[in-house]
Length: 349
Image (cartoon, rainbow, N blue to C red; front, side, top):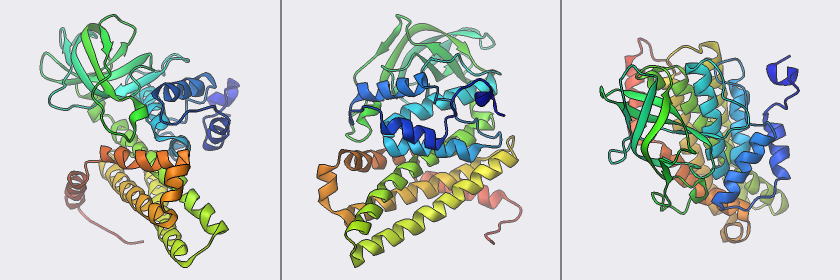
């Protein structure tokens, strides 16, 4: 019996999440509603899927995919919250207090770098500067933020966002897609925070790439939800061109799902291994699958659902923006470097 069942807590499984979200009042495209959806999931105790690398990584990714299929801005916040839980469990030795809403803000654009003031070895630091692309900034209570200590080393720190030195701006996000994630800039003025782990611990831990692969599960979940719209339409109004599009979608999604399962199995089998190559491969495959599904679905269904179905339209607007979290050809080159460093390269069945 697992911990959640022992405590009488509902498991954050894909089926339970879909059932809960299906009855949740929700205004698509609303940042406020997106934050309320995260809070509802936390209040329902559906915010703790299995931790990665502990034997149920695929179940964790199916949970992320279920939320992504509902709404990508919601999963952006949900994935950040669940990633924070996993990071704290890995680096801090325990999960955070129940009922709080967490985020992970780790973007490092050159014009928005956060400083961690104080002794490099000190557990307590003062955060100073601006953090960019802070998803759900107005909705969460706490965040894990990457920063740079006075020795020039990268760290990650936990911060409560109710401090008067925290200012959530309304700027920093102009895209139409993913607008409801409210990924704005946040200003920190001497805000106390607690360093989690040592310098570079966030980047060097095994969970870094495990979490990176989890993003692929979000992209895949949204692509699969878009594919369902095509499948339902083909069943009602079959046509040769629609069947061709659905066949291409099925091929793409089936291959990507198999790779995600294989990646999850590898992570569970070798939870302390460096999973960069496996994560990169999964992310690139999911990115390509998402792009292909968006293109094929649009051609199969035409303008009708894009103009009239809020769920379909939102997924189609959000997914192309979300997958740009990938670094595209830069990631392909990084994967290739991993491949050539291996003593033996095999693409056999």
